[in-house]
Length: 207
Image (tube, rainbow, N blue to C red):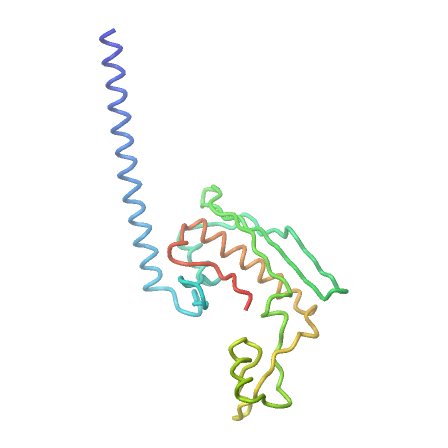
């Protein structure tokens, strides 16, 4: 009975030592990851290339070039980028793509899975800006600028007021919308795989 008790005590002590050692290693690994991410942001990443700022978001948005650098840094791999939904409705002038991206470690362990969507109702695809026939009065002009329905553009050394209108040829943007969905899935999966949500958000604005 005494021997059994001593054996159990020794096993418990050994287990505690192993657990403490694992925790110590994990903390050091976490510290190293944090230092690496911080250094990446300070010494490598460029604003408006690897990340950008979007109105209303408290963290910079990770852009595709930045996600590719994180992928290379941590030796991540793209297992797949597959289309899970496609709508191309010529009658309704509507396009919708959803892609799923799976990111793995170098050894094939799945670390990040994310769906990314893009559709022709987003402002960047739905509208275009054309020269206005008449510049609105100042009060209306300020409101249109505030709502994103108009803007000034310099053309041949002359400032022209551009008004926002529905894109009459939105169906021609099929490939662009598809690529946006793929990009969003990839960036989201990289953020998850690298645990980088503390540093970056994902671009989800439709503007």
